[in-house]
Length: 152
Image 1 (tube, rainbow, N blue to C red):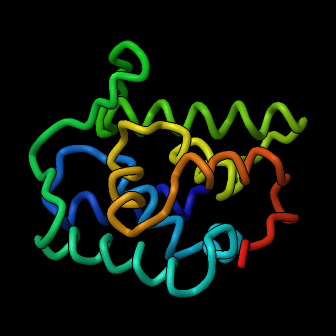
Image 2: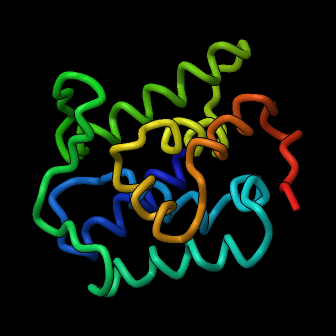
């Protein structure tokens, strides 16, 4: 997870964003974790998600630069350099790993937490790419990490 967070932090800095948001986390996950990519419905869906994320990082498409991401899922949680929704997603990923008795968070734990928040930026990216985030979250809840298989 350290490489995912480091990648998200670099992406936020490069994009000129004040905070790491859920789209930064999703982008870093998609680039670094083959299990996360396998959780999607095949290579075309992965390519569409990455396409939207790349467009965002070069300034096209979905624009959130300079604004704070707050999905409203929970009262405003603060962590310097992190959007409230990203903090909530990280806490959800930790809780999911803990429920399995794991102390380490896997990429699919974070993906499940991101997909479960219908108001976060990561879900907005997924929606634009044609991914049903609710169905993805449900599929991830059913399958433990390392055993998730792509539908299709």
